[in-house]
Amino acid sequence: MKKVLKVVINILLWALLIFAFLVTLIVFTSDRNNGVPKFLGFSPLTVRTGSMSPTFEEDDIIIVKEIDDLYKLEEGDVITFYTIIEGKRQLNTHRIKEIVKTESDISFITKGDFNSREDDLHAYSSDIVGKWTGVRLKSWGKAMDFLQTKKGFFICILLPMILFFLFELYKFIVALVAYKKPEKVELDEEEIKRKAIEEYLAAQKAASGETDGAKQTEEEKTKNAEAKEDAPEASPEEKEE
Image 1 (cartoon, rainbow, N blue to C red):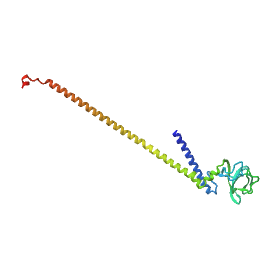
Image 2 (cartoon, rainbow, N blue to C red):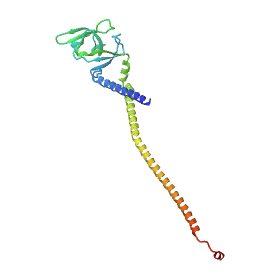
Image 3 (cartoon, helix red, strand yellow):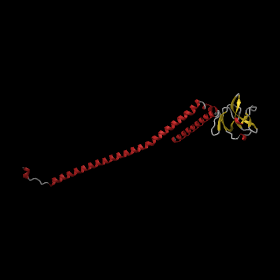
Image 4 (spheres, rainbow, N blue to C red):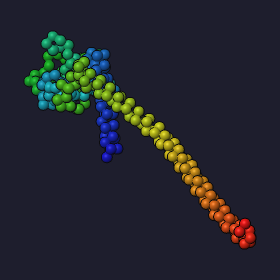
């Protein structure tokens, strides 16, 4: 059970580390690409309005892919592009309603699925960011926005990464101690065996010495008895004297 729990914890930690790495990459790449994060040609973008409802809603995250050849786009495709909204150059994601081709360029007339009319400005080739892949992460936009703030980045990304590396350091130390500990135990066992053998031999030697002493005493008693028997009895005169 403990092994299974350790495996699950390791998987969760590595998943968290990978997620933290991806979010970090998104944050840094978005700063370098005019607010558009990119990873292997894909861009996760937060939907800011409900103009494409019900295809996707405000605060959803959509995945947009870079386009190599704009002439392969077709009517009905959903594209992300820069346009002017309320006097500011902003990202917008709408559906292509019509394609306008000229000898030197291509542009697109777009419209939001929820809107009643087409967009006022065309989307020109230099404004196109990418085509929507159809991937939608419902209501993840607020979380992504929070992660891109300094507070959110520290709490959700930096702090877990620090805890992850501390945990891995703890595992390394435990493994190192466990690796050295068996050697010490083996040495202790050898020492115990050696002392036991010495004590056994000493006990055997002592027992052997006591036996030899007992045998020697019995032999002396036997010799004394034999000497008395062999000695001549004294004559009456010698006894009287």
